[in-house]
Amino acid sequence: MSRSSSLRVKIVIPTYNGGAVWQESAAAVARAVEGNSSIVEVLVVDSCSRDATPDVARECGFSLHTVDPRTFDHGRTRNQACLVGETEVDVVVFLTQDAIPETVDCFQRLVSAFADPAVAVAYGRQLPHRDANPVAGHARLFNYPAQGHVNQHSSKETMGLKAVFTSNSFAAYRLSVFRDLGGFPEKSILSEDMYFAAKAVMAGHKVAYVADAMVRHSHNYEPLEEFRRYFDIGVFHHDEAWIAKEFGGAGGEGKRFIFSELRYLLRHAPLWIPRACVSNFCKILGYKLGKNYMKLPVAWRRRLSMHERYWD
Image 1: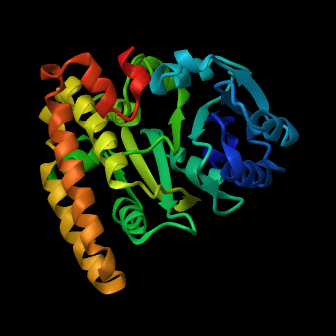
Image 2: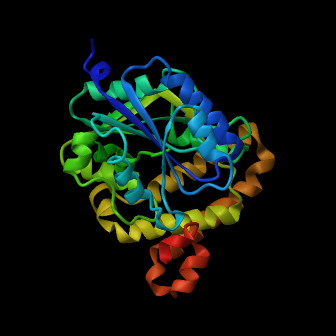
């Protein structure tokens, strides 16, 4: 028996009005969990959904915990979920409600990364949804390549900020290390996953990208949505400036993304190039404003942000 196959695993899925995509995701999770004795619980943390989201969770046999949506926070809510329900586990997998497991063994493949005792975080590959537009499709191909890798502190010399890239849409954490390092930040606008990965790498642990553990997850964002999302990313990088100081900024990776996207669209969808240019302009403007959010009144921060409740 491999070291990873003996680990006890808990899956945590935050939900809110998940709709049809949650029904598809929940069914795929249920299929993946069936007969897998290492997965001891699937915990759905629901923010008082007004649709059938909680019913779907119950029908699939998942545990259900309800939280007040006014208190939801990307970091704090996930930290608390580790203490709810089945807590005697070795690995916690976080999945979002719109991430659909691509294969029934995706969780086993993800958790297999923990056979290396130095790995503290593992994240899987995100493929675009079937209805993804060309811009969204390229973003997934760029950020989630077909080849896996394992990063450590020295990886920053070649990968820069990408050395601590991860995504809680489909990621797993060694719970002992997670607790030792204090978990996610208690108030985070987003990118709590990068925050923890950076802490882990700086403490001597590793981050594994498991390319053969796959889910479908993407967003067809409008340019204004991209602006607001990147405003929040800028806020995060302002508040957690130590990450860029330690691993490098996002500028070089941003340029590489834009040129990759242009080449991709020229080959596959040239009519989308103007839309991509508008979106990229909105991303850059939003990011720069977010980095300088302290100069803006709170009312403006709330209007520009994708996560308005963060500013309450």
